[in-house]
Length: 496
Image (tube, one colour):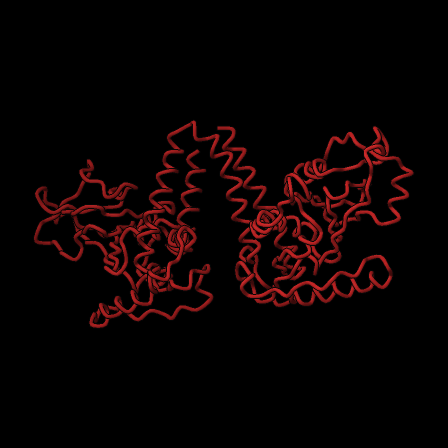
């Protein structure tokens, strides 16, 4: 359980650093104002060292437009600890903190082997203050290196040689800086660089050269409040066995939804020039459709409305394109099969409920069939083929099954739609149908007179983000791996 909760804490802090826990408000202003304030504080400080400019390759992820990236050395001072020898020790002297004093709850006092040194050796700059972050800067343990604690009250101690103080500018909330220090953005950077020959060391530049995302001050406050709220919930989960059931239910679904959203925004994969563009793929699909129309296999559809900027829900990579479903697939339904034609054996006949089970589990115990003769007759008008999508159009809308080459079935008109797929990766399209961008559209306008429905006209009009085909395949591979890992975590939660 602790491992799971640690993963949840890491996810919360990562989301905080990316601006995904809070809404950005125009009233907050811009973080540029904070940068100017910090610069004014530093301009007369001769100790300030010039830091390298930040380039795109330094940026680990996107942040909101009102935020700014800076080097950590720009927003905080790094103070190294005091070195001392055995002759400096005095029982009534000043307290010196060492690595063992740094614990999750803050600086631990009164250890059995606490060290004090003569008062005249005190360097006031190295005295710990409320709001400071103290880190372990030198240790033989890769696990402990960089371990931090936040000083939450006034203190009478000083740091020893193996510790460092990170003293953040008063333009940054100490508690927000503490969120950063606890995040993987800081931890991974420190651990990857702080490796010495026989001992792990955190050099000053390992901290100062790290990148730090600054939100406006008002948003920093909201982020801290949200992080505190979510961390309290995670702590409750650790302490309450009763919460395991709710965690089992919510954790996989919430994380999967977040991953799908990231995938549909192009954030799970790299965009590669060799992939070409979605425009290239659209031209291939258009040519195939025109060929099938000329052969009489596909009906010519009415022109679809252009997609305007105000109808786009989020930004996508430059080589992707917003399209409508009618641009990339041919949405069809089946011929009417009357209930009097239902049989107890023959060719499987699937309604929405059977397609839903196939979508979820890959198999279904079917109890409805039609005769081979009727199937042969209806198949003259076309059948679902390999890589087409079967989509539930009544009940639970949008459940999607990818047709296999070995499949042989017919389906119920109106309750199931077939997306005849030409060149797109079918499993990318299946993931897309389960993503929030599709759920929002389906839920907003799929209501019928008595029950929610999907119609051919509506589906053709829905918009979707389309990557090049090669990237579609990479997204599927990435999502398959991540979804499998999430399921494993879900099983672990259930077993505790």
